Length: 251
Image (tube, rainbow, N blue to C red; front, top):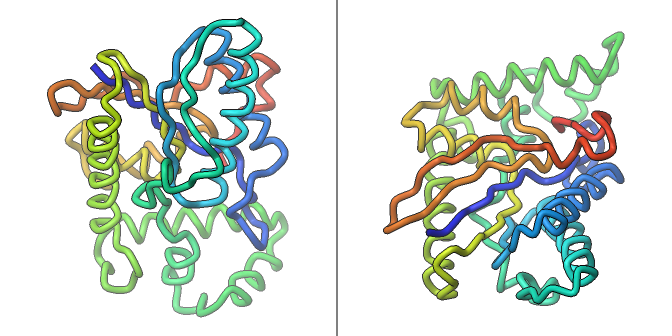
């Protein structure tokens, strides 16, 4: 039986010019997950990520802490990732949907980034207004009534998430790992929510609610046996409480 751990990336840079980069806290969250798995002797046999910077950097922070912590225990471990060979671990199917496209297409007045920035700047609490606009944009995207507007509709994205999971199945088969291997994938909330909803045989509205609850570096666990995938747990993030609740974030 193969266990597949789908980890959301660490905190990114919500509201900044470039969202696709980890905050300092985001890097620490990934390190905390690495420390947790090392200290609990959870063996990681392989790691994969999407191609986004926040996903790959989360894997790097995780692996550096995990590797050094496991080495400290003087127990043997199998190198699970070579950061110098991205072709060996990057699976673009695990990339998140295009946030900017979803936000811009949500309102005719948001024809460009400047228009959105102007709307947010007028608010008493800009960050709250941005969150409100993004929530409305997500609801429109998930509803499926305007699919032709988007670079990638929800239906297309959900199908890509399904293909992403299939890619992991193929990688597991190609690597010929052991019978009880564990594979860790750093991806994003949308992908995890879509896969979870599929396994629960639910639609887009459920996926959207799941996505809103997913914590940075929270882990959703699946099992793969005889090409059948089952859901074990969703959004497990106890590793973040080792230093206090302040490490629990959703962006």
